[in-house]
Length: 248
Ligand SMILES: C[S@@+](CC[C@H](N)C(=O)[O-])C[C@H]1O[C@@H](n2cnc3c(N)ncnc32)[C@H](O)[C@@H]1O
Image 1: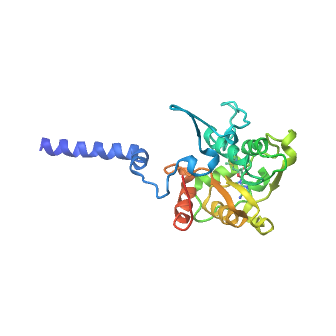
Image 2: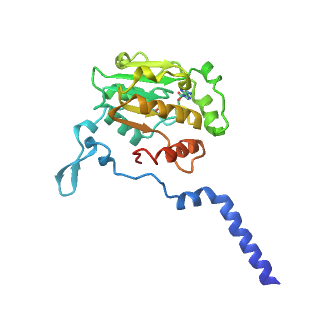
Image 3: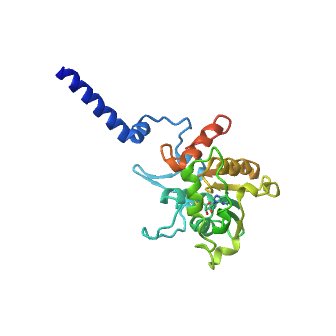
């Protein structure tokens, strides 16, 4: 009898541990369906040059202008340093750039600081009063929907009043209503970082496929399996990875 009770208690403990750590456990066993590549395979600017046996130098296109946002600034939706470096480096070899989701304009400013003088950057975003009109659809993740409201809080940006502002055109519009046909095959670089709900990520991606030129690159932000607010991004990327060349 004691052995039976002990066995039940052990099983209950294991089950409880699983419940408490199920996200970590899932992540441990998660195998992405997307091809993983080294950044140097994405674009030749990321290939390094050998200086000596144990020292490799970056190409000049990946030496970027950047700035730092203090960690206590409470700005939502920021990219990591590594992501920002990839975007800034690619902007150096891109003339026409489109960003879905401006937020504070951190990435927009980086793109403007690093792209050539005659580059043009479009960034679409929502003003606070426009975000209220976004409707949650059946397939949309609740947290991603809430984040749209939390991140649509700016109508002035890091680049407002700067020397590079002239390169940037902000479009204050719901991307679901945005007419992409005027921009067919135009962009060298598109960054998809607007609403992370299924309906918005699908809309922004499908419009991007039409707006991208034949040598262009699309970067999606927040492909993070296991992260609740990124669930719809992961779902959509997995769906399209069957027919598209996608890398992580
Ligand atoms: C994650 S933040 C963007 C962060 C920014 N790309 C950066 O790197 O700093 C998301 C932005 O997408 C915008 N957004 C969300 N849903 C949108 C929609 N349906 N149409 C246009 N903009 C949208 C929000 O207003 C917010 O500015």
